[in-house]
Image 1 (tube, rainbow, N blue to C red):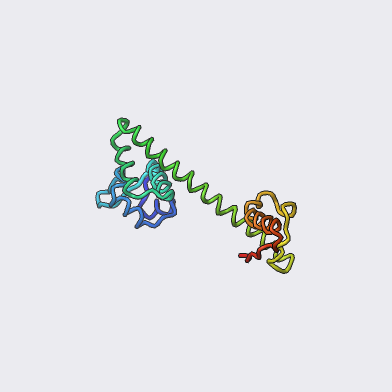
Image 2 (image 1 turned 45 degrees about the vertical axis):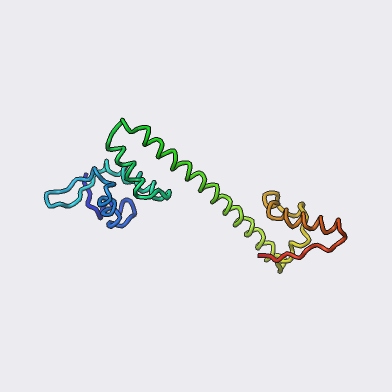
Length: 165
């Protein structure tokens, strides 16, 4: 079965102009043209297009995707190069996932914190929290406060006031 730019764009959930841009940049060397010069896509082109979209969404620049596509076109002699590109991009994604996990952790903590503040009617509820009052996964967000409170107590001082954010 064959598809127009508009039809294949709809299947990929991208704008038709995106596919035209990819073609202009040399990312679609497999795309055929009709007698009238219109791009014609086949079901078998979807694997390529999905990989291009995947790489783009992982932050790979178009120029790097083009190198990868060129290596694919060159054939088996460039398997090592293609594998290297894929591994490097996978590693970048793993680093990004770690970063996203850290951000999610902070947001989960802040959700817990504001649910507690809502229940207590104030954000200052945290001033008297002990490790037993806080879920273990959120201890890391209180360690600085607890350490400062301990140091103040050892010096006979009042605990430092923290501003809830």
